[in-house]
Amino acid sequence: MFQNLSERLETAFKNLKGEARITDLNIANTVKDIRRALIDADVNYKIAKEFTDKIKEKAMGEKVLNAISPGQLMVKIVQDELTELMGGQEAEFNISGNPAVILIAGLQGSGKTTFTGKLANYLKTKKGKSPLVVAADIYRPAAIDQLTVLAGQIGVDIYAERENKDAVAIALNAIKQAKATNKNVVIIDTAGRLAVDEAMMTEVANIKAAVNPAEILFVVDSMTGQDAVNTAKAFNDRLDFSGVVLTKLDGDTRGGAALTIQYTVNKPVKFVSSGEKMETLDVFYPARMAQRILGMGDIASLVEKAQEQYDEEQARKLEKKIRKNQFDFQDFLDQLQQIKKMGNIKDLMGMIPGVGKAIKDIDISDDAFKGIEAIINSMTPFERANPDSINPSRRQRIAKGAGKEMSEVNAFMKQFDQMRQMMKMMNKMPMGRMQGLMGRK
Image 1 (tube, one colour):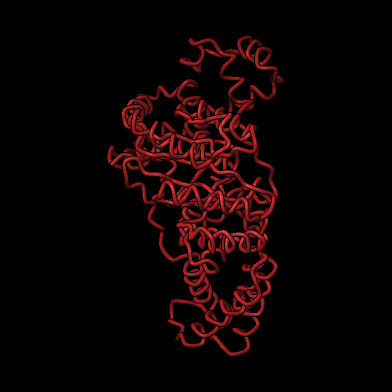
Image 2 (cartoon, helix red, strand yellow):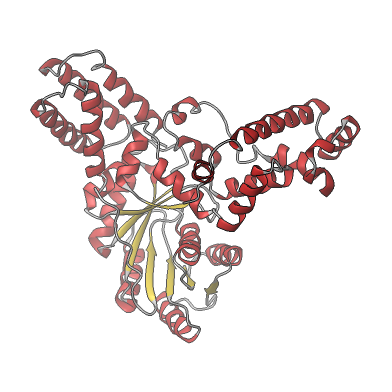
């Protein structure tokens, strides 16, 4: 996501490297390169020009402080303007009402049904809600089947009437069902088309009028670039939706939709989604996204994802074992499982400042840990709890059970031993410092 844009902006800032002060000439060259980078990212020319004109005006009006180079100042100005372009602040998500009704709209193939499942999972696991998902796509049986599977995966109820061809009636019946079964959020997945047409718009508008939703979310495929922005405008003119959801941000997207959809329709991006896993849904923070675009990483989001998987009691036990130098393979396996729950490994690493650029050409699969897991799973419970007991004959058996070469097992054992040596060094730290590293307050 935004990889090409990030690289182009970095090149633009290099024009100011080594410059002692801001001048008309170096600012003009940098601004020109920024404008080209935005247009290449599928940002509308008018928006790109207005954006860069603001940057130029601010840069020329600034006095460079002694501690700040022109290049650093320009990065700060661009960061602020990018944040503002994408909405400035995190948008509020309204789930008031009993039940709160959320209407999902968008074109076919934009990821509406998958997002419906992700949103239900988000509200259940992070907001403590009891959602009901509603299959109101009366034209595509596969959509009902897909939503049924997703609901089963995340453990929420689904309402569907396969024989009913009245989407409004289905929505109203679902709300009655939610009230009868104490569901406090109803998420309605509506039908889409391959392109905007009157029949689709009328149907969604009729559902909106009937159910009076707290939120109307327009789901857009970010890979469609400026077309996504144009489609959003058409939907907003008819539905007056409350927010936008950008899906497929892990795909080959240039970023134009994410950057300019808020500016074009004056409605905030509320969620961003990547991948098929139900956990891969994030609240949209304009400032954090601007940081990621500029290669600054996103430590705040990384910490939040870690805290979501953080178990205080488990951390306390782990700290105790480390203190006694008893960290074993089972502990290591448990930590791997927690990391995997946080999301796509490459995306997580990209949130660390400076790492995103370093790994941009490296293929890091979500299956990267499978080899390690296979090795540990081939150990007996005794071997997992007693790493020092694994002699050459045991290693040979473990390698055979994991389907690995002996050299791979030996390499892993060496790495694990090195990690344990680092644990020993941590034992020498004061308790307060140790707790800080473990994430405890």
